[in-house]
Amino acid sequence: MADESSEQTPSYEQAREELTEVVRRLETGGLTLEQSIELWERGEKLAAVCEEWLQGARVKLAAAMARRSDPASGHPNDAPF
Image (cartoon, rainbow, N blue to C red; front, side, top):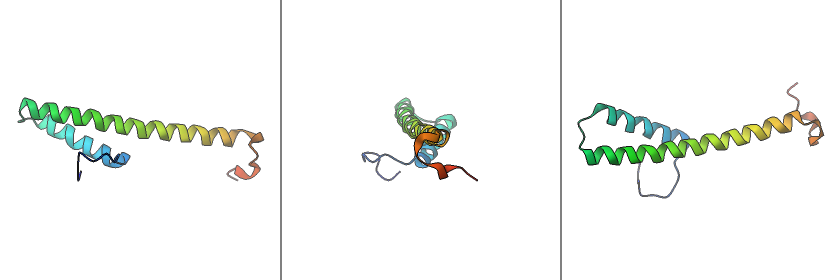
C-alpha cells in the first residue's frame, strides 16, 4: 500500500490482498514483538475494512432482491426473461 497514513479506504480487493500478506508475515515469524503487534493491528483494521465492504454488498443485494420480488415496485420489466 502506498501511504498507510492516508485516510482513503482501500478497495475490498486491496484490503483483502494486504490482509493476506499480513497473515503470511505473521505466520512466517522472525518478527520482534513490536513488529508482530503492529502487523496484528494493521490486520485488524484491514479485516474491518473487508467486513464493511461485504456488509455494503449484502445490503445492496438484499435491496435488489426485494425490488425483484416486489411486483408493486413499478418495474414490470425487471424479470430476467
